[in-house]
Each structure stands twice: as C-alpha cells, then as structure tokens.
Image 1 (cartoon, protein in one colour):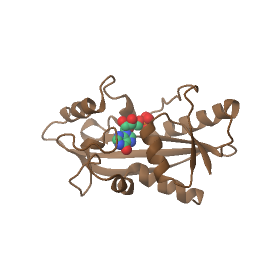
Image 2 (cartoon, rainbow, N blue to C red):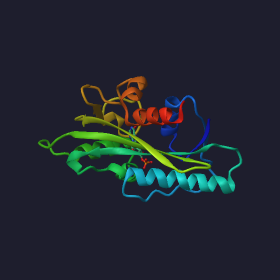
Image 3 (cartoon, rainbow, N blue to C red):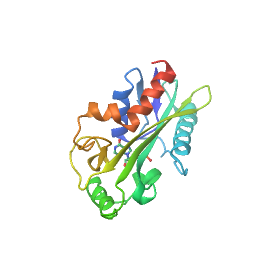
Image 4 (cartoon, protein in one colour):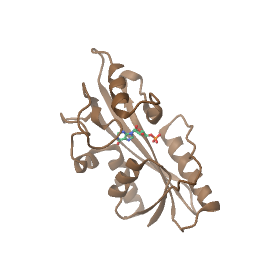
Length: 194
Ligand code: IMP
C-alpha cells in the first residue's frame, strides 16, 4: 500500500515507516505548501492535515497513492493543565529541544504531580473515501532532568509508566512497543488489514 505522508517531520516519518512496514510512504514534497493545523484537539488537527494533503495531492500530485496519512501528537503534562499538548511543536519557539525540555521541566514545581502522557492521533484520508482516525497514548512521568539521546523532541524527559529510563534512553524497539505512535500505528495496521 502506498500512502502520502502529510508531514515534514523527519522523525515522525522515520518512526511511521518502521511501525508500518507494509506501507510505502511518499513524502510531502518541499515544493508543496505548509500543511495547516489550527484545531483545538489532536483529532481535529490530524483530520485537517490528512484531508488538506489529500486534496492538494489530487490537484498537484504525480504519483498515485491510496490516501494521505497525518500524525498529530504531543506531550500532555498534568501540572501544565494538559499542555503543551496540541501546541507541543510550538512550545518555546526559537529554542532547540535540549532547551525546550529544560524549560518545560523548570515550569513544574517540586510538589506537584509529574504525571504526563504522550498522545498520537493518526488520520487516514483515502483518495476515494471518508477520512478516519485511530489513536494511542502512553502514560508516564517526567524525569527530573533530560536523559538519553535516542528518539526526538520530548523523549529525553519522559519515562513511560513502570520504567525508570526515559524514551531517550530506551532502545527504539522498546519505545515502539510502548509509545503513543506505536499503539496508534498498530490500530491502523489492523484496520487496514496489514
Ligand atoms: P505536531 O506536528 O503538531 O503533531 O507536533 C508534534 C510534536 O509533539 C513534536 O514536534 C514533538 O515536539 C512532540 N512529540 C510528538 N511525538 C513525540 C515523540 O514520540 N517523542 C517526543 N516528542 C514527540
């Protein structure tokens, strides 16, 4: 199955390619416009991105694909009222992730809950059919300082429930078996009969 990936995030592309080996991905071209995402919820954004990409591809795309796939995801921290959440990619603009992670941790007081979860909604907009979503989440706690170089984004500060290592320290295969994106991707694979 060939799908257009409605994202310019190379880390997401890499993870989704590993998680969905039955799918050949066509990457969103550099010449294509920015994909809008202005919804209040992960699901709105995922559907908005997938349908935008599908419609653009119908008009401008070359290669034949069976649909457009979008990922909207983020880190939801209880002590930040669920933030940065859908705004995870836009949190502390201008800072690199090392600095973003330290800033986020500095916003959590010593006596509040460190509970957090990663959430991922995948939306698939078939070329000829109605778009749908699947989702996945992983519960965990925030580390006291960033640890590990694996993964991307907020991985160095997130420890999945029951483990004392961050996603930044754990091997990729363990992250995939537990992660929000891993869970959503396995739902999608089942739904597509892959
Ligand atoms: P989106 O492009 O609006 O979906 O933004 C997703 C953002 O959430 C990413 O840029 C990261 O900051 C964060 N994020 C999502 N998934 C992960 C993950 O698996 N590890 C670390 N950070 C993630």
